[in-house]
Image 1 (cartoon, rainbow, N blue to C red):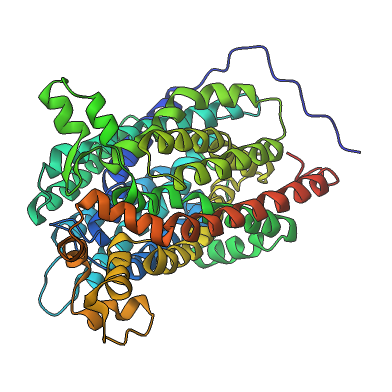
Image 2: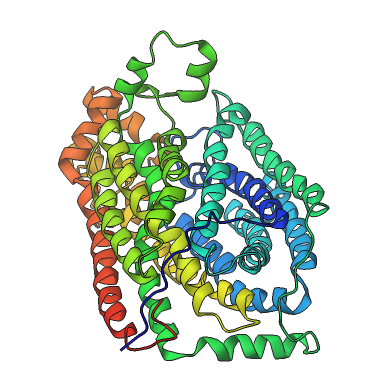
Length: 511
């Protein structure tokens, strides 16, 4: 029988000045990151973006897989290094590395002798390496500023700050990209991320380093060895694998949904509701597409950050009495429901309702996953254990990105389905002997993905909205894309429920 959970303190939690400095640093880093992240899916693969790279869904899946791997699995080692060598020094190194990565993303394009796929891959890996040093450093520093009494609210505030940066980052692209997305305007967007990152050099002067409690006499190889050794605790490995399955599903809202929205969702009714608004509002909240004015995907997805900004601290307060595992499990079911509601519709209002449901789950899971590992971490190993918190993200997104690239590239992308329709239902496909593989459609028809929708409209006489609806009704991309991910999330939730019951027998894991 385990000891009962302690009753929460009735005192209002108080935090040191360094806690607020760290949260400001986190906000600037997230602002820079999401300024890039919310637009990267469009820049990398969207067939109808004039200034984008027009890579395939599979190529995007590969980039996102290794992006997640670098910035989420490398902290397994960098967390221990932050404990050993100091949080402030490690943070400074990470800021420099992230800035270099953003600059490389801005300028590494159309270079002789290197493909755009290789160039963007290398640049993103540099940026991801900087993030890999930053994540456990900032989280370890935050954890050192919290006690058991302030843990739940403190991590809730931290997650709130993350989403303030993310929310602002969703609206900046409209100002840097302009109405027409050109190669130059894309470069300006990435340069702005480098500039926002540079602001954290000034914030470092306001932050006083805190001791980690780790042994400062050991070398870097010993740190790496201890890091790897500690992770192979069977119960910890089980928890990490379960959460990996869930993050495999969860990250698709940010990594795959942008392309899905751009391809399929009709936000024209929202634009109509904005009629009469000042021009600067319309410029920030609408964009020109072949289907007329639409709300940009990043603005629709900003509902996620807005919901969390409004509700995460309150949710942290409401769940302060709950076991962290129980709170995470409840959040999982809201997230699964949100993914299905958001993915099964072409209606922007229903999409927003789905994102709100997803956000309700995320605002529970996000802070609690960090809180759980912070509570079970042995003394002197906070940075190490909070490096482990990124493992589920890394493993889940690595595998999930490859799955998403395969599913979306074959059965979800509108440009690919337009080519398929041309091959199967129009005279252009007659006598072409298409082998049924999505990868051979362009060569078989002699039509590229960026040309596909225009060709479909020319052959059928349909306008862009009609053509989009016909493809949706014919091929049902929502089923092929979102049902597999929802099933993965549900399996992870069931596994966590079983783990939670078993953890009641383990005092050190029953948090």
